Image 1 (tube, rainbow, N blue to C red):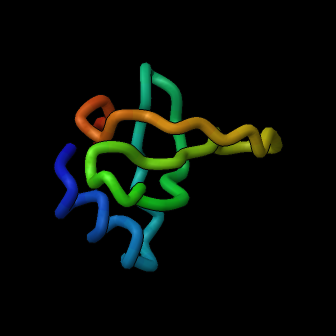
Image 2: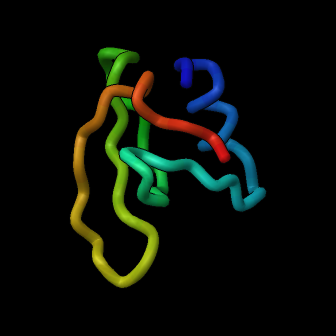
Image 3: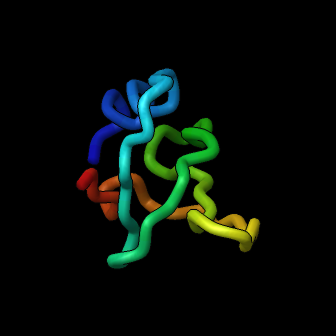
Length: 59
């Protein structure tokens, strides 16, 4: 995924499924470096991770 698409997903009101390593995640924010994003797993766990945006896949 690229920076432009991450920004589009963040500004969208739609429920857009994104996966990281095969697991559904919510994108919380695009980080200032433009290469990483803060994400958390869909579901009850709120654990956040910083991941490379090129590893995010839109379903």
